[in-house]
Amino acid sequence: MSKTTVSAPANIAFIKYWGASDLDRAIPMNPSISMSLEHCVSKCTVEVLSHEGEDEVWLAEPDGGFGTPSPAFAQRVRDHLGRIRRWAGREEAVRVATRNSFPTAGGLASSASGFAALTLAAAGAYGKGGAPPHELSLLARRSGSGSAARSVFGGYVEWPRPKAGSGEEDSYAAPIAKAEHWDLHDVIAVVEIGPKTVSSLEGHRRAPTSPYYTKRQELLPGRLDIVRRAIKERDLAALGPVLEEEAVDLHLIAMSSHPPVWYWSPGTIAVLRAVRELRQEGLAAWTTMDAGANVHVICDAESADDVADRLESLPAVGFVIQDGVGGGPETETTHLF
Ligand code: PMV
Image (cartoon, rainbow, N blue to C red; front, top):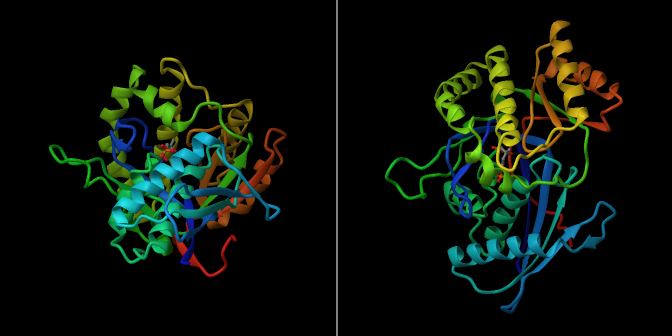
């Protein structure tokens, strides 16, 4: 029986995907740009069984054991496996297990890396691992966890919205620069662990009810230009302020949605303040957050240890993960089962 294991990275969005024209298929209202991470990854093993029927879905625990995911999550996985089977022209059920190298569902993009790894491992197990990368990105996007489209690649990645008048087949991600192009670091201050109270799917659903939603859409073309240029020219001083504007706007929209969504915790504010102080002391470090309370601090390689030391000294910070730009998904020779 054919078994494939793939590790796919989490990613941190510089320009956020927030709001969709079709949530089930994750057709985004706006383009987004992210950096794929090196150490925060999901590893997924898919084994094709010799029969049709229900897929077996497992979550691998850190101690090496296996647990069952919530019924709702298992269903999302099975729905996506059905989609991959139709695409691959196959019918057999699979056994699948996933392990994250980082805390799950704390705004650390476990669904992006998880669905990217699932897509790539299932494609491989069904004999379609050599499919064009854009097809795999499209397939990962259709999981409903749209940012998974970006986690199919390493380095710096852009995911456009569909062109006017087209369907949704052209809304897949593509790399805009390789990891080696710019050694950016991401020092993650974990202030809250455990599942967030409102999923990002629900956040997307509510986003257009915020009065600030349309305003952000107007500002995005300018921000996208700055971020693309900053990446090309390795210009952190240009990138940093846009990172912070984007993160604040995402949370501003969330907090002013109907009903409102609050992802921040007191620890979030403590970290934001500490990073402003670090900048006053001369360090180039800038914050961003996805749909959660934890804060990603983007900085250059030389500043990463100093940033981590400062964040670790804050009582509100549980622990710090030192990560940085990574090369993208890898096929593994060691399987989870
Ligand atoms: O891919 P989703 O549905 O989990 O949404 C991701 C939303 C953000 O992480 C907040 C932004 C992004 O672009 O990753």
